Amino acid sequence: MHGKSMDFEQAADVAINNAKKLLPRAKDFSLEGIMLVGSNYEVSLSYLIEGEDPLDRSTQDSAPGLGALLKIMGRRREEKVFIVSNTGEFKGFRNIRK
Image (tube, rainbow, N blue to C red; front, side, top):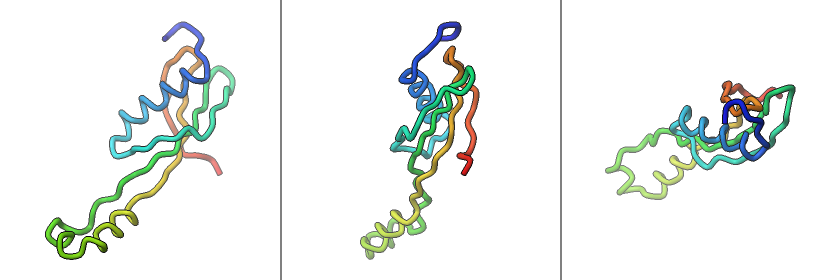
């Protein structure tokens, strides 16, 4: 894709593919927004991060409800902005500015 102009959908695909490579614990990606700023696309993605399971397998077997609750509580949704040039080059990502 380098050297050729891309559209919003292609920029989102580049961002998601690189996010999956760079954030291996992340899943359930959602496109939150995308803007063309200068010659770069700023792609806002949110995703789910699974926390470490604080219970070992034997405790989960004896208290399955507690294990499920702790697993859910260990999840968190994060959001970052991924930068993609208008030629398709992935340039990096940063935290959302609030």
